[in-house]
Length: 265
Image (tube, rainbow, N blue to C red; front, side, top):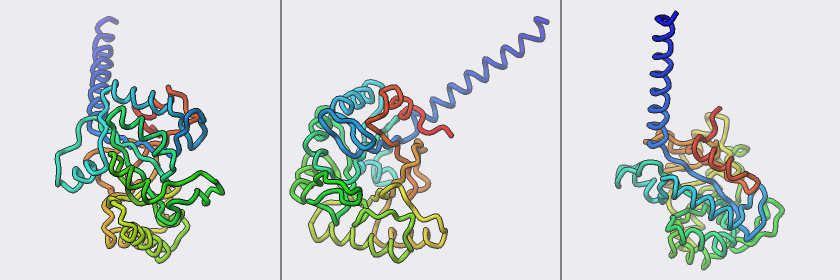
């Protein structure tokens, strides 16, 4: 009986070692992108993290050996125009351009020397989040420029915060062109990357191809969905990059699990 058990035990041990090694390899050669929206001194909800939460999360990422990277670094890695991303890279993203990103998020980011990117729906600059029926102030042009001068990059989030999932190729092209034109007219330094509002993309292949063509024509190199998965490097589907949804209602333990594993199924 002992002779039979030895190879079984050895096999289990070898499989365990192989699993740990493969998982470590997967973890260090992948890109995590975290998706935030609003930041508040105390309030926490689905779209809002508190300042203490954000500080705790960034402190964890730093102490756990993750490396904060900029969108520019991700673009350079993808296009081969810059160095490869470091192991365990993390990109912090904020959707919609809420003024609280400037007031509350920026000081926390600066305290950790962390870059980040804000995705801007250009039709609502200086207004409020009317697409949600909300009254949260959005940054003005001057505030966005101030953010850009202090280490936070800017990129595209459609013009009118539309869900591209339900639009035709022509409608997507029209909105995307308006997004690009508004950035030029306002002289905002938006990088050639796009975050889909609501994470929505066309399901119909022909419509999706039309969207791809519009993005290529507009110079968009990368586009971000939600998906809650961790991205393998090098990026192979540049218009389908996954982000991990960070919610103020998440416990700290859940945040750590999301960062480590992403969505497993």
